[in-house]
Length: 396
Image 1 (tube, rainbow, N blue to C red):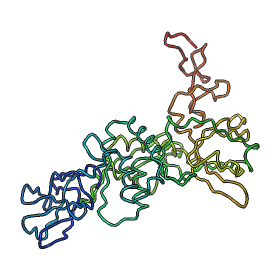
Image 2: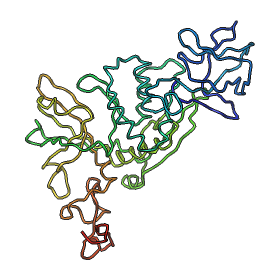
Image 3: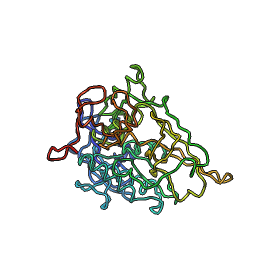
């Protein structure tokens, strides 16, 4: 058990079920490791105020021992989980979603620390801390039955909102794309660097304009305490009013933070609202030290699709997957478009090249700031617009 795991309900309290392991001594197993505390114990959902003790035995396992037989009652409890000083929250035990993930990988799965890139995880932690200070105490993990390790890893990835992957050195790396880390000096030039012309897949079948999310899972009750549904209206309108969503709900199982959930929903709707854009690029094997999984780069493609026919100039992408073709002495990249992040920020574009009207422009062009004509104060269609001025209100 990692983090704070609690559940109080009129229907029956207790977040985790304890397992009867000694019928004679009335002894129940709470956790395979030493928990910081078990504040409440419940018998069939009702609070037990006395008549039991918390024991740490058998190499540190945590037990609940009753003074008398509890018969067929369901014993549940709330707890404060494992302690690891380097990763403890202000409450004195591990709670940050990133540190919950690292604890699971290194101390529960037993992956050697040399095979985990802890520095990359710290960068993800900073992104989440900047999002909302409350995230730091929102993570937890309660494994109460046998589960596939890969499935638990997937759950934690989705909870954090990042990706876990092996880098070129074989280390597991946790990473997340954000405005703070997409800048890059790496360029790929079509026709010069690439073996073949890049292939663009607009991913319309993978578009998502409505997201259903669930979070804050309670194992003993087999229920989520949080759920919501959001849509991106302009993306719905682009599909003639039709909704398109993933078959599976956005399952952020191991967090209590609604801010973290909202970030995931927002990113999903803008990343995939009008298609899940991918570009396939084949490069010579000599680029093996230049680009790795999750690296950002800019594609310079004069043959890319654009409104004015001038192609793509410095489009921001990041590497999602690499397939190494050793016989062909080449590497095949699947890269994802990063426009969905850029368009949330004010980036001045060239008014001579951008389409005149916001309403009929492309997702790519919306990444840039739209300024009206500085003389007329209007857009090309006559609509009133905004002029860029400095802090003294002098036109720039």
